[in-house]
Length: 338
Image (cartoon, rainbow, N blue to C red; front, side, top):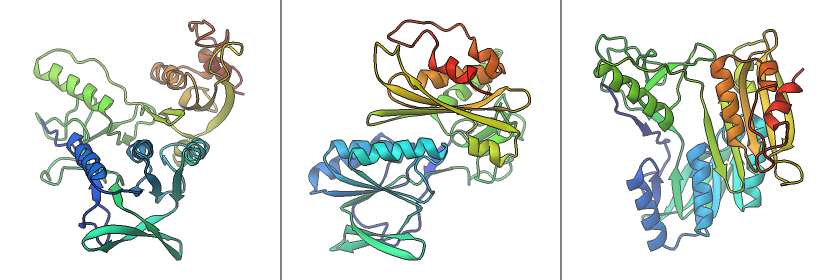
């Protein structure tokens, strides 16, 4: 059983070995960062990478009263999501005092007396120096699989497994962040290094080794984030992923109430991606305030079951004013999909 996990990607930065550079991958890393922040005079924090960990780090550092700049090479934060979700998250970051630089990379670090004092940012043909008392690298991970060379791997080095977690070599299994399996939505390999998936993969292997019949696992690609006062979630395909695969799809977005309108004022947005011919649901993104992530979970189940937007629109969901209107926002989004 191969389960070596993944290691943080360390960008080739000049000065990355000086004091004040950290990577967050485990509890020990967290303790080191907190100890450094509490024992040094830290004002300016630079976070490299605006994925889930980078964004959550930005909120944590703001709670400690630090000035925070998040630097992301892609053209928007949380690159796995569609731009409108990322734009809403960027607005939430700005409202809470986090500076965001997208389409930008950290070119090098500036040191004085063996410790970091600044970072040089590069965007297009221009560069800019910003203060930095600490830099936290959150530029992604890479499967820790270089020690094994005779199994089938994806381009990123992840070990290819089937629905039983079997590799290309008989009696060799792989699970967790070192592995990659096929999406139940597209049939293509999809790297999804999340604890939810690793747990299910481990259960499947445990059943097989214990000579029990494993339960079926369909990888959909479900993820969620809470950032200050906003929640966001994604299941299945985003619009840009559907477009990149050349699928004949439609996209539909609504803004609705999280609760009955007389009960609460929080709003959420629901974006659906569905097949233009069959009307089967391919993906959904939800973002806003109130009950956001459970609405995405509805759609994860709908994708798993192969439901169309029309079938989803009349799903018999629970109703009570603290949770939704008579027509839940997820039902309204489905029923208004043309």
